Image (cartoon, rainbow, N blue to C red; front, top):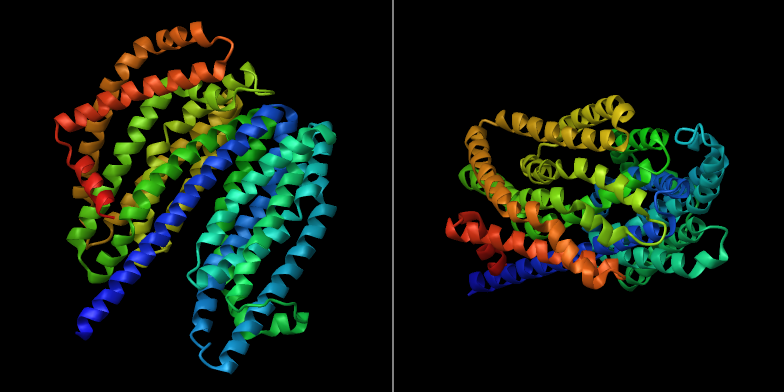
Length: 540
């Protein structure tokens, strides 16, 4: 009887965890879609003008430090320490010490980020010379925008701490909803305030700082409701709290690896802004499209399949580990490869449909299309990296993925430096795609060193399956290659005054034809991966 009750409890816990995971995945997908809408708003008001570059860099600076300090501190240092401290909350003294730790961390985080932001605002012009050395007008406006948005680092760091507390208590939805609020506020502020500010970029910047404040304030009631009334403490207590000092010790080593990764973006952005006006913005628009596609892959595949890898590794069930790893990469191939081929033909139509309005003119479309073509060829490898890296983490190995990431960084920066001259933005995008392939290659090389996994067998299975999907994608693409301009012309006759409807119908019809042929080929050949994925999702 006790065993049955225990099994029932475990089943309920599993269902609850799965429910939370799926709801968080839905929120993440919605957030990515709204993030794309935010980029559409930016495209409408700023296009690929110098003002767009100025806003992009101004937003990237506090965002860089957010990723480096706030997200890193919470995930790597605060949450594990907080969870360990929660185990002592059964006594009054344990609860008091945990609250002191949380207040000390809250005080220290607010103090240090405020000092950092103050210094950053003072030295903003010097920081921006990395990006706008030859353009004084853009530099001046970027300085204004950066100073408006730099305090975002303080509020988003506090929001990250609140998220850490809630996640430590296994409460995920409030934190998952805040990016949706952020994107919504940025979009709303841009439309509402643009007529009253010097330029639309400043309206959007006000939206960023407002959205950051709401991200923190929205989570606060949930933190208080669960018994954590935060307050400031003295700096002496904040710096001397033993658990806060533990957090600081944990943060240090990880910042180095994270800095190398984030430095990738900084160097690429610097090269892009020096390559010409609008190059940086066109790269950002292209990346946003790619991120949305990757987000869909991660939601549909990663959440459902990948967590099982850790369970197999713990049980040393390497046969099932290999099977699941191979299957996961094949499913990524089933999604990413057809999307890549479709985008190579229909990329211009997709970009026109999503971005072409307002300041996003024909020149903007051409610039973004060229960059997107070079980005999308690396989609499969970026998607595979999202699968193979967790295969290391499942075995408790963080060293090899870090080394592969550093090699990715070195390859990307070296190639971007070489190619940006002759190819401009296309060179930077090509460098990222090649570097993603290099990252994938080294991940498999390092995985081959694991004696318990037959990597050659996995690679052979993946290569054969990928070749099949490439063949099917080419077959499905042939009608579009010959007739997509005719389909567009047909819809243009009836919707010439409404280009969005014209492009929407073109993308929908060509997408349906491509998917219909592709799925037909998979069904005719009785594709095991399609069948397995459908069954897995249905069971979950």
